[in-house]
Length: 435
Image 1 (spheres, rainbow, N blue to C red):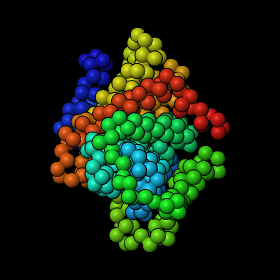
Image 2 (cartoon, one colour; image 1 turned 30 degrees about the horizontal axis):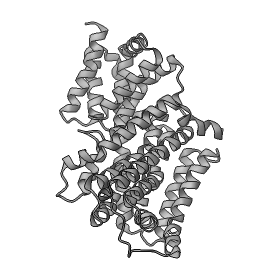
Image 3 (cartoon, rainbow, N blue to C red; image 1 turned 180 degrees about the vertical axis):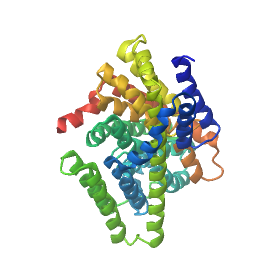
Image 4 (cartoon, rainbow, N blue to C red; image 1 turned 180 degrees about the horizontal axis):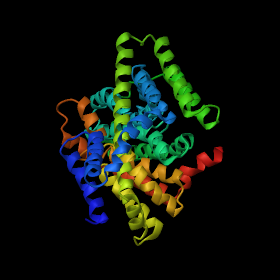
């Protein structure tokens, strides 16, 4: 059997396992073990090595710490306080509540590093409020979904941590590379909502004229979120300034979130247990996928398939630009059927040797990768954000309503990806400038 056919079967069998419903980690590891037993028994030695060496990577310490920080922040009341602030500041303009929802999700992303907290929390807080003021369902749901997806891009982003670990790129630099693209997309969402609601006022009615707030009320509403703003500034600032490693900053962030909950009287036994359990589940899932991907890629390399893939891709027409576009298309398609962590852990080791051969900046490629990943959150049929938000919305909201609401925002995301592709400085300017 030729190496080309073996390589093709290696990917086909994996996707068969995944479509059968096998967990991603077991699909990756199971495929690798099956092919190693048949074709390359010596590669089975990589299985115990993956279990022993993978969990001890120091970079992985940041994952549970940032997850724990995000879990605690979810209960701290920051979403309620921030939404109250935007309600009082811009609720009087058409689409103001939806624009404010995107802004709150952006703040939430900066203190959690993942997408579920912002999506589920704002689905429970913002959606009922917007419906009460007769907002169109598509604008209400779309703003929550698009804003929630920013958690993959705005630091401290857990997907960036996994990419940096595998691509051997500075986590601090990657965090900085996500700032401008993330804020750019958030701005695009706000502009789209504002323009559309100005043209079609019935989609996002302004608050009633009798609901006016004094300057003092507005100031106090904004001031109430200062502990969270300070926590974000310190956690990201010490990384960017080279004062602390990402792991140390993550430890500080988790401690800060713990103290904020304690100061606000929200640190109950139930909150602590829920946060710990959530952190353990998500960390465990990521670690299992990483172990499975390590085994899968070790066997892939042992069979000589990585060299074959690299040479095949490099020989394609279109040069570096064509190869990059093909990679982005692969990531986009995979995002429709796989979760984000699995895509990162599977594709990064496959793509990085090709990126190195082409001499492409891995920092820029990482930004493109994660911008693409957050598009995957909103693309059916497997978009994670779509299912998370459906789980917290009222029963009268169908899955079709959710799918229809995100269409314009996916177009904006693709436009944002194109801009980062055409103008790399959008991602690379800040990290290089701070250096």
